[in-house]
Amino acid sequence: MMKCFTIFKDKSKSKKRRSAPQLSNHRKSDNLDLRRVSKSTDSYSSPRSIKEMYKEREQNLRDFSLFELREATNNFNRLLKIGEGGFGSVYKGTIMPPNGLGDSMVVAIKKLNTQGLQGHKQWVAEVQILGALDHPNLVKLLGYCALDGERGIQRLLVYEYMPNKSLEDHLFNRAMPTVPWRTRLHIILGAAQGMAYLHEDAEVQQVIYRDFKSSNVLLDKDFNPKLSDFGLAREGPTGGQTHVSTAPIGTRGYAAPEYVETGRLTVKSDIWSFGVVLYEILTGRRTLERNLPTVEQKLLDWVKHFPADSKRFNKIMDPRLQNQYSLTAARRIAKLADSCLNKNAKDRPAMSEVVEILKQAIQDSE
Image 1 (tube, rainbow, N blue to C red):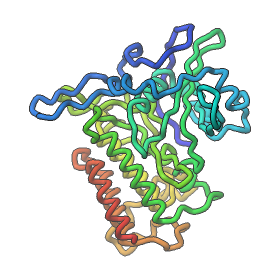
Image 2 (image 1 turned 135 degrees about the vertical axis):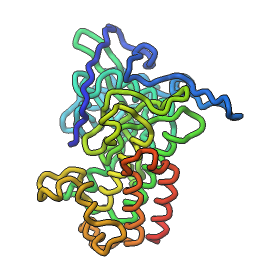
Image 3 (image 1 turned 90 degrees about the vertical axis):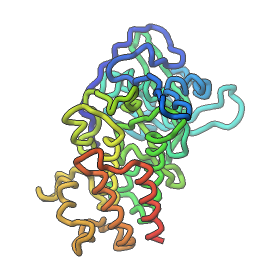
């Protein structure tokens, strides 16, 4: 599993269970910038900040007790563990309605390792963002649990359960069935629509995802994609600024080079990451494959030898597709990936443009 490259430490000192998470209590350089955008030259109302949206919708999130979540997971039984990473562990669980009446619900419960890569403020950011936003291509957050006590701090998140795991699992785990071409296109289109909502929705302040990768694209029972893991997300620049300045953080192989080098974060940083995943979709290869010959280990370097318009282009296509794909659509997607990976960030397309090109690729395939 790819790992993030900045470590955060939890500095919470409270000794009691928290109510709805408040970002204003944890405002540091890497917290969400909650300043409202001013549009003096625009007749439309300014988009609202995540904080404003969250205050409107926080009552939709359930404040779970640690006891409830222990019950739901049989005391976090390792047999129910369905994921693990620098953030901690994810368990499959079963919860009852708040009043105890009605049917139980299967959920995914993330138990954060607060001493690891994703600490308290990432937990707060995820609660705030997913509590404020609503889109069919964003994973639904059902509730949270925060407890500070003698045994240390506990930070948990409860999501809708996604039975088909992640895009990463289906692309790279050879034990799983091959994802057909059209399914791949619908998955990446849905992911693009989720990203376009974050970047361009007029209702809320722009959100920079900052950690787009195939493992964060989860799949429901019908293989509809939903973006997950918003602990690293940030609100976009405000007050006429062109970027957000922050310590570089993300996942190696997916982070945009100008962001890694300068710490200047924009939505175009997300576009670069999207381009990487587009090539993963085409090739069935990870961004870094150390078990391959040296010249093929770095995905973005390898595909340069097979331009989209060249006769050799089909050499990069995932052999597991067994040639069951539209070459016209594949070329279109490779060109789109190249534009997303433009070294000049300003020349990368907007996410709404990416959505339209992917729709064209689907038409090509039909």
